[in-house]
Amino acid sequence: MDFSDTPEEAAFRAEARAFLDAHMPLKAKGAHVSRAMTPEDVAASKAWQRLKAENGFAGILWPKAYGGREGTPMQQIIFGQEEDRYAVPTTVFNQGVGMAMPTVMSFGTPDQLARYPRPALFGDEVWCQLFSEPAAGSDLAGLRTRAVRDGDDWVINGQKIWTSYAHFADFGMLVVRTDPGVAKHAGLTFFVVDMTTPGIEIRPIKQISGSSNFSEVFFTDVRIPDSQRLGAVGEGWKVALTMLANERFTVGKAEGPDFDDVLALAQQVDLDGTRAVDDSAVRERLAGWYIRTAGLKYTRLRSQTALSRGKAPGPENSILKLVSANKLQEIATFGIDLMDMAGAITDPEIAAMRGLFQQALLYAPSKRIAGGTDEILRNIIAERVLGLPADIRADKGLAFNQIPTGAR
Image 1 (spheres, one colour):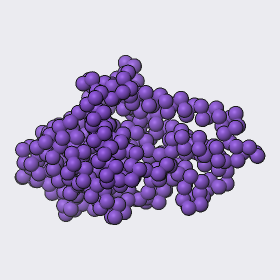
Image 2: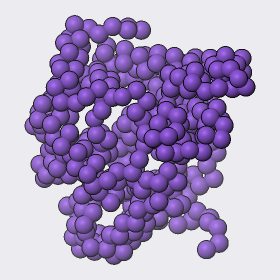
Image 3: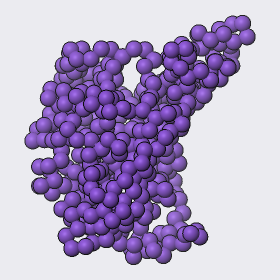
Image 4: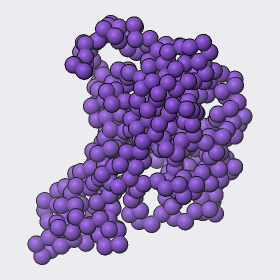
């Protein structure tokens, strides 16, 4: 494992840091609060995205034809490391730039490639991911939203849910069922959809944290021209897997209070007349989180070392997400417990550490679902890394419309 930058990587890090220093202040310690995105936040995100794109830091891996830099994976990682130190606006472009457009570049027609990537990269258009449904989350191939061919159009009916930033999105990446008479993975087709198309209804979902960052999306006789199809008819699962692979890379790190934050809290809080950090039980918990934090750090470095040497990383992203999301929830819960009755205070002007742990307690469970549940990630690690037997699939080989379902 190599802990140091190559001369080329060091030069790029200096370039990135100079750009960030010129445009953004450093992030205040403990500034991890999650909140609802407002139209003003979206406008700030778009402005920052455009500034990055104009200076060659938005599409580091993208072809220059689309406004990218044609850089290396390590350059993208380095910029992400540096950007994380600054108080940049919360982004609404992870799905569009990080997930949707790489998928369009893999499967898009010449017209689609000429139309979509550049406006997304320069912050002109926001994208969302229309995958999950009320009965199809982890088992995405079990989705029921239907598309029926009608001449040069497809008519779509159904519902999607947990769609992040759908109420701000201009376009969505949509996977639907076009053939229920074949096995569930074989009957899917993928589309690009304009979110202003008649028949689309977006209903933001109120979250326990007070945010409404994702929505239900309903399709009622929505007509989409076949020119908006991405990939071949019936090959939507192949396209979806490409996008999901990009998603795991995008959401691999769980943002929020980490070891340094819970240590600082334990140094501040009084426990039976002494500092919490002096209690042996508290110190034992802190030691466990320190070990996991170090493990995550070196696992990321393994991935970065592989990329720096031109190799593909292994299962690191699944491991990183599984461990970091669980650690975040544990730390948030422990922080609230340490505060005793004061843990109920959510006002950042009054609460310890500006309400960092209270906010994290409310949004942490979602990190164990988004981009693959704990169970899915454990299956990936078990089957693809450890070589353990795959789960038994009772629906294997059955046409989708022959799979038994519960009473309706």
